[in-house]
Length: 480
Image (tube, rainbow, N blue to C red; front, side, top):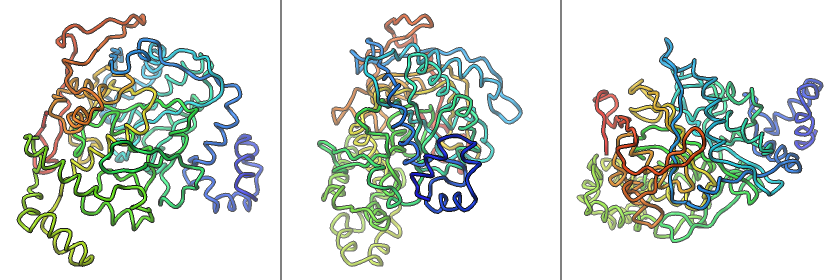
């Protein structure tokens, strides 16, 4: 039985699926048509989108957003819920669906173009067993996204899908993603394929970078990057050990397939790890990327970036001879390089992550960037070691530019985006503004009226801090 025939039979409905013989199902499994979690692969997702284009109407941003791509729009939500015995806001689920629809109604209108598709990029990363709950705050709320789906269908935008990777689909299911998506029949492509070579050529889109430090070109899991796809980037509100705050820029990492998509890979092992994953590194990355990243790191160290070499790795690297010694060790082979790096530790990790993340966001350019800050979690992104607590913050931040959206989102979390690494470097590279005093910020009221924020004191701020020390000092919270 051919893979495409399986897809068509399975797509016809549960009855057709049940009528398949065990032999046919085993053949389909061998072809990786379905995973053990019931997850959908790229080919299956694209099949559904292809057949859904005929009756679809594309959405559009309301004119105020479309005509002001550097502006940021705040929407106050009204979720009223208490934590249950597990520490989650489970009773908020119906309200989250309502708020998602209300927010989408204030941001998106019916368009004039027919065909195409709409894809949600949620933040569904790894989640630990104690956060197996659909309101875990580690994730973008699946129920909030479900509410957005409900509104989009009322304006005839019916060809909808979500896409995420590379976390295992089993974890997404246990974390409650499908509890939110299944009631509104929102399909999700699970792109967590084990190796890059498992993606077929037509599963991917490639985009060239411009004036970049690291990448020449970047692959994206479809439908990300499709010319007729409307991309809605829905991030959570939380902190991260490398990104400091993890909002819409960082969320776009999940659009890049495994092998290319480990953005936190250290400076000294990015190339070797990519080669082991079967990546044609020299084709897709700049020849002098390491030297250029190092030069940028030194510039930012001289500029006084906070905690820029907090582990002391670069000082040890310098003491051992710096670039010339590193280059010689690299040339001498794996053992020599391992010996050189043995006591160096983390080396320019933040600098490398920032450039990869910014270049990725600049190449992909989502149509709409949203921070779903109804819940926020301090401590760090994954809530490892149960450090930090989820908070009911009742705010949504939206706009066309991810850089201004993240600057304002970080400000609401209690940080100064003029100090945050990635927002500061985004401004330096000309991508967007990081000074909230210079950003056009507006409030969209419940009735849809847009009013400018005339004074920053009008914006309610929270304490969503980063625990960089984790086990060493669980109570520490850093604010930039």
